[in-house]
Length: 155
Image (cartoon, rainbow, N blue to C red):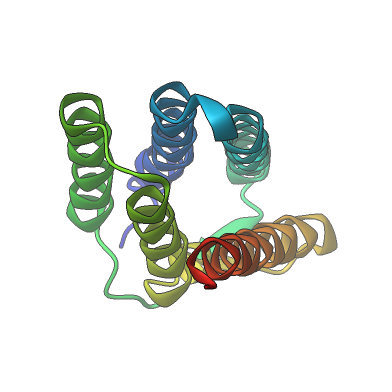
């Protein structure tokens, strides 16, 4: 990845987080009984997008480099397309809570497994904090979603 791709990758990662927020808002619309919980998740995803946007300042200052990675702009675009497809499918099919939780868990898991936040070599303490917050928040989301799913499938 070259330095000219850095702004595009940041924009795509920000868009990815905003797409996840829109997906969770869609779940809240379709599942009115759990709307508040989904809106809280969506709010947090929008906060993650702001954190990623903050990294742009460091890019402009030349303080962010990229790690050697297999992640490409196309892989992020593919992930965004998946989220958009799930959002549209949710509006069409109106799935139940368990199905939506499974989708959300898979989305959060993909963020961690694909190491989208590990693309950056962050040497500045402020940028390291942003990546740590993003990773910890994503892990916390996944754990909350798994716990929620376990509560609804208990006999």
